[in-house]
Image (cartoon, rainbow, N blue to C red):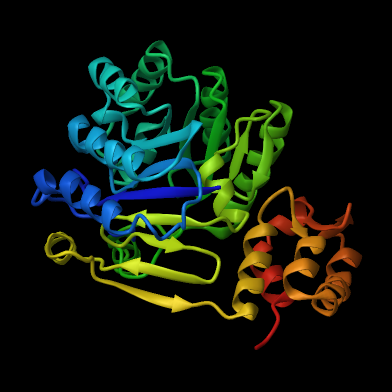
Length: 376
């Protein structure tokens, strides 16, 4: 089983904290459907005939493009790939792009899961993040989505925002729970290099992010999610039983995926490649017959370390049986020995042949993973 990721790079406005490849422009928007469909046809052999179980439109803001272009891309996928009958087909969207008519057209096009980037129900937080939608649009779009029949629904929330108190964060979460949303992704605000937010904080024009506030709100998040019956199946992802994001879970489990669109990444287990992060060059090279991209062959050590890093972020953990089968018995035994330190500190447990981080361990998932990496 494999997945397909579609990168749509357009945004109405570039948010001050975002470092993903996206453009606050409509140039080439009328060409993106044909370009991505063309790339998919050119690269249909990448996944070597594996059945596609998930399709994910990310960005950027995929909800900005015409539904006709979404249908065009999906037609190319269904024509040139083998698709599982109950494939999960997700589209990321912003509240201010969504109307009852838009919901209907998306559903008719084949989208069966929405991931809505609301970030907060509070206007003060939305203003700090330079979001283009309002708090009123947030509640309206969730209501409209559910009325349109989108039960497989996810929202994004951000905590650690300087304008967000612990009480405000609790109110945000309670508001999300009141809608019965089955999947919630919650991320700590990170100040990325070379973003407008980083520049404004450095110049003293914005309040800096407080790590203690983020830590406090992470604890609140985990406690309230548990009280409401949500599983923390990955560091930043929570769902009601069975409502996992199948697409993102496949990433963490090391499954193959094909990425199409400017800057999109692909992975097939032994190599990783990424398309040029330039929309003009992307459309020109696809039209010429082959998209411009780069490739990295992954050594067995790199493959192992990537598996450790991604698997430990999930509630399923790092499967030592799988490590033994793919990398050898000695590697698996050494990994277990190295993990003893984190078991003694109660940041990790060993259960059913798997290394699993505890709640306290999840706070340091990246550092623990790095400590367990094998050197070349």
